[in-house]
Length: 282
Ligand code: HEC
Ligand code: HEC
Image (cartoon, rainbow, N blue to C red; front, side, top):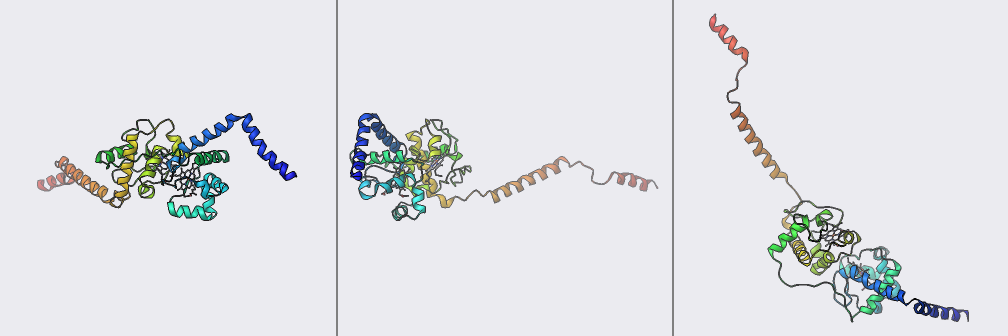
């Protein structure tokens, strides 16, 4: 009896709640969609296309809802605890899903959005062009990366937080990951999605209201692709022999200059003249 009433109340309450406050439901849906577009879409689609992570169409059919909520809130904990599915996914996708500090309410609403959006309205913010990259793009991307050219939106340079090992680039920041091999790791769609729509809180904050233009994203992706392809050719900053040679040549030039300037100097001691005169006069 008690159990049945409990269940009835459990069923009736949310319905009453929804009737009394329909706007909260709508808000939750909007929150889920907003969160998906701003954060998850960099790495996931709501269809079956793989991006950085798996396509999420039908994910609720293949997994337990509690497990999905955990992976959305604390993917790092699942992996650390040795969860079989999470570790299998990691082995397949190579990058771990980051812990984005998602709350339970956010996780619930984003999961509902994914379920609704599956198939029908598919969110895939990544537009891939198959146009080959040009040298101009690579150079433009490099200039943007290290701040020789400012981003149109006024966002900070990538170099401030990231480093890429490339002879032509000044050493970068170490706040965030080094990006030399990011292209091999995430592929073009992943890199593009992350730059166009950063899912990481620090980077997201840095580019809030300072969007990176389509053309800039293309150039940065082109530069990162090139840096990755050429990584074997570029050494981590070693000025060694060049600096030594420059120093040696410089000091030789100075020595020659000094000997020219001082060619009229006295060669023996002053006393020598007096001494010679004395010797002659005796
Ligand atoms: C930086 C990329 C990235 C972001 C951002 C990201 N994910 Fe993931 N996600 C992954 C990767 C990679 C995996 C698979 C490997 C793993 O689980 O660590 C994954 C796995 C998942 C899974 C399990 C899929 C399955 O087949 O079981 C779900 C569900 C998921 N993510 C939902 C989300 C949601 C919701 C968001 C936004 C709040 C989000 N992810 C943001 C990269 C990301
Ligand atoms: C304010 C600091 C900051 C700036 C500026 C910044 N990023 Fe990031 N970026 C991060 C953080 C933090 C991460 C999360 C991963 C990590 O901890 O390195 C990240 C991750 C990435 C990743 C994914 C790395 C991976 O291996 O998963 C790429 C690609 C990337 N950033 C590209 C860029 C590009 C291109 C720019 C310049 C337009 C840029 N970032 C500017 C902080 C920054």
